[in-house]
Image (cartoon, rainbow, N blue to C red; front, side):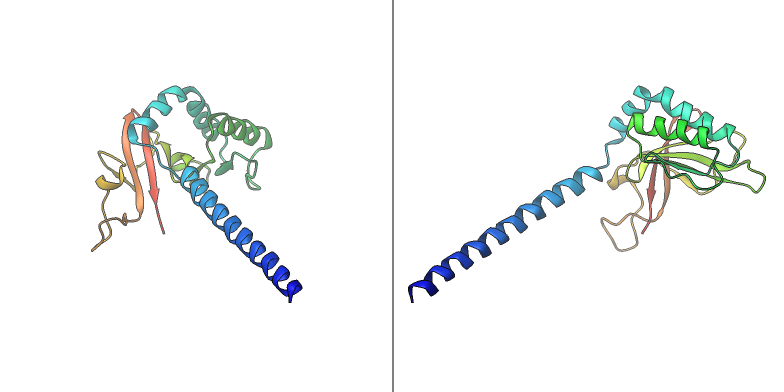
Length: 180
């Protein structure tokens, strides 16, 4: 009988330790996800823009020089159509400012079909829209804060899908891409 009680105590302690470990991991995971996907205020994003404007402008210049460049990830994947040195230069700049990726859409001939988007915080970042391209696909707003964006019908929190922009300086906009 003594051995059974001893085994029961050991199993109980293991169960409690596993439950506590699971709870700690859950709290850490939630904290990490909220840190990774935390969107800064417009004011902080604008300050970041001015602090890193040179690097952001260099990223745009690389995209404008390379007619086949459509997407570059900071960690290195770039697709088959991208010139290797240009990709590496762009990826290095993205890493330098802490951005995750940059993308654009192009016409068949390689000319820009829209803005060049740089994502720094999940789905919030910047877009440069050259004067010669059209601003199709973007909705201009006064603020990218949750409470200022259009909501899904009958919802107080869910934001309608779309690419929302707020002007910064000529050609540059704060960008927030909402999609499901």
